[in-house]
Length: 559
Image (cartoon, rainbow, N blue to C red; front, side, top):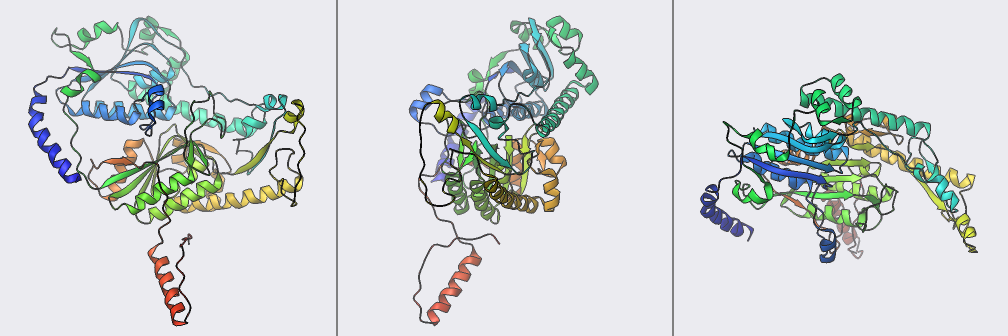
C-alpha cells in the first residue's frame, strides 16, 4: 500500500512540478525568529490542548524550511528578522548550525533586528551581515546563570529536605536543602560558565573574522546605541526594515523579499522519500520516572525536580523500544535525550531495553539542552553520542532522600499519629529525618547503584571504572568538556545524529525519520536466540525425564 501511495505522489509531482517552476520565488526569503522553539515537534495533543496552546514550530521543522530554501538556486539569500529568543545555549547552537548550512549552500544570510541581547546577537553572528534598525541598540552582552535555593523558604513553612549523595558534587537536592552554594557547586558552576562563555566567544570570533580578545572587548563594552555598535564593529550596518530591498538589490534594482509562509509553494519542493526502511526516533524528555510519559499544563519559572516538569516514564519508553526491535522496517534508532535524570530503577529499565536493541540495530543518542545523571545513563547503550557544545551532561552519580513535613503539620495545627508493623516500615516516612543507622544503609544502597552506573558507562565508553569515577561523582560538564573527557563522540545537533544513524545502518541520506508514538498496548520482552535455544534444550531434557512442559514468560538478563 505504501508503494502505491508513493507511485501516485510521483505521478502527481511529475504533472504539477513544471507548473510550480513557473512561479518565480523571491530573491530573499524572510524568516522571523521569536520566542520558544522545541527541538522536535511536540507529540500529538488533544483537541482542547491544541486549541488553547497552539502548535509551536520546532527547530527541526525550521531547519527543514531552511534546507528547502537552500536547495532552490533561484533564491539568492535569506533575511532573518531576529526579535527575541527564549532558547538554551544548546538550542541556540542548533539554530546557528542551520544558518551555517544556508551559507554553505551559497545563500547570503542577513540578520536584522531592532535590539540584540546575548542570545539574539549570538545567532545573528552566524549570518553574513548583522544589521540593526535605526534607533535600535545592542543590550547587555555576556553570560549569566542564576541558582535558586529554597532551604529557608521551605523551613519557614515547616518543610525540610533530608538527602544523601554519592559525593558533594551531586548537587541536585541543593535547591531544596541549602540557602547558598556549596564550594563544590560553585566550582562546577564556574567551570560550566567559563566553558560556555569561551565557546560563545570563539564562535562569534570565527563568524566575524575577528579574535577572541576583540570579541571579549565588544562584550565588555556593551550596551551600545546603534551608532556606537557600528563604531565598535559589533554590527555591519544601520537601516530600517523598509530599506532592506534596496540594500540587497543589484544594479539599482531592489531585491524582492517575501516571508517563507507566503512563498513556500513557489520554492522547489522537498524530494520525495521512498517508503520502506526508516530511522526510528524516541524522545526521553523531562524527569525519568516509574510509570508513563506525561506533560505538565504549565512550565515552571525554574526547574524543581519532579515538579511541573515533563515526565519520561519507563513503561512508555521500554514499550517504544520493543516496538522498534520488532519492526523490520526500523533500521536504526535515534534516541533524543533532554533530561536531568530521575529514578535509577527506571533509567536501568530503559537502558536494559536499549541494550537489547543495540545488539540488533545501531543506536545514536542526540543530547539536547540537558542529558545528565539518568539522562546520561539511558544514553550508555548508544553506539555514538552527539551533543552540542553547550549541552549540560555528565552528573554520573546517585542520591536519595525525602522531604520532612512534620513542622508544616504542626504549623497547620494538624495532629498525626503513625502506627507501624515492621522495623523499617517508616524508613522513607515524611514525619522524621533519617537516623544515622538509616543513613548508613541508604549510603550503602547508593554506592551499589553508583557502581552499576559506573559499570554501564565504562562498558559504553571503553574506559575503566576508575577513569569514569574520576570524572563522575556527580560532576557536570558542558558538551565540549564531555567530548574532551570521552563521554560523547561528536559535537552537533539532531541533523548530525540522524546522518550518523543512516551511515551506521547503511541507509540512503534521505531515509525518512519516524517518531515512535506512545504505545496503546503493552508487549512482552522478546527473548534472544541464545535464551530460546537454552529454553528449548531445557524443555527437551524435561520431556526425556517424563516431566510436564510449562510454557512461561522469559526474562532475559544481561550477561
